[in-house]
Length: 98
Image (cartoon, rainbow, N blue to C red; front, side, top):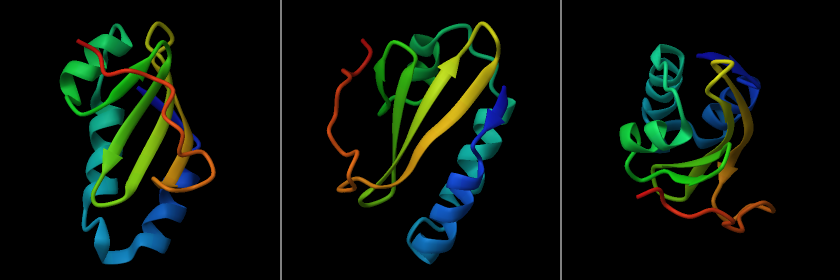
């Protein structure tokens, strides 16, 4: 998958420091290596993910999350938000994929 908005993850890595200890580089590697055909398929790979259509929320470590917009047909992912779960965009709108 092609990743866009990766600077948001780099910013989170700088601000969170050791709290996420390798989680962000691992997430980037997993997203880049993935070739999912649907967000439901992504949810199987990330079982704790919350999926709502193209929106995917992945929880990282204590109190952090990454919100993605995934276009699996185009094999592109936009990092929409990366930061604190209690940030301004913390309201959950999706539901966990079955």
